[in-house]
Length: 495
Image (cartoon, rainbow, N blue to C red; front, side):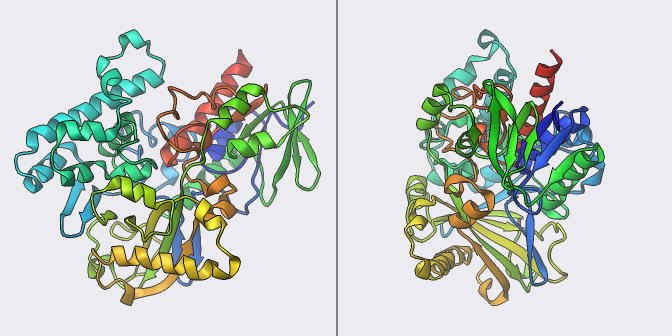
């Protein structure tokens, strides 16, 4: 008799939804998390009179009430938390700014976005309309293919455009670099520049935000994480926090359970890991890492991390000049150079500015606002920084984000009341991810469902992996991945 039917390692997005799905289906499940709160990236922290959202900039896939195939009507209903969460809708996708060259706000509506872009770039209406239709078609057929539709039934548009670099498709439809920036600025959400990013990835991202709208959660992502944990516990699940896993135990070639950091061994025939793949396979005890796994991991590269400046500002969004919840500010239209800058301490060339009080989520006192400035950055450059130099370099680089933000909010420095700065080393420490990666592996053309099957096959019976390291990064993909892996496990056990 095993102690549990399943053990889930890590209470990040995928770990939480996996554990809740398993427990609510009747599988006795233990959730183990080394941190003291659930959520991973989906959490918050306090400084002074402000609470800061750690990582959620925009939640895709929520959908309006009654909209099918949405998180609201699907996963959140299945977990029994839809009525417990209060969603705050953003009516614009984003504001895209290149100082002196571009300043356009894209509404979260297909037709309204066409109107805005045609007004900003006269004569572009037909091209934008055709581009949006291509996005819809590629996204639709990609979803069909991911759900198992045979290739011969898939519209050829997916094969013609899906794997092409985004930049090639933009160049086919548009001549002006500014409109290309305005339409492709979400590339930073995916960690690859348009010259490398697969068109199908941006198509799926834009489709998710246009169709299901961008949202925040009242109380931040921590409220969502806590609601999923409550769903798990109310179904009888057991959770242990401040508890790390030292090893994944095996016997006879299959999973037997886990050994915790205090030496206690807990048995279960199924283990779901929300940890990174390198960490997960390094924890295997009693069995060699299968050759197929070693060969696979050897061809993958650790993805990008983030540098974030959290600020509590003693002024309202309107007083500071924030007109949208999400603003992207780039120094110019050279996305490849921006991508290369992530590998150095060159001043930030592009930032995502999140103002959480244009549509308030409840973290800032009245008359104030809570803002984060984020740029992407690889961790390697930080590993060689001497400890005595760390604070100086951290705050000097943070200044470059502030300088770029001042292009849209000139008086922001005068309103600063609280500041907290996170580097890729911070991400490494709190997430436990190699390189502090926030998207898992580099999301280049070799990653994804067409070329990798990490989520479906670990080559170790009883071991399952879920999260950004075995699929696509981001909140919606990882929330869905945990539930998907759990359902697959349940089906296999029932067969």
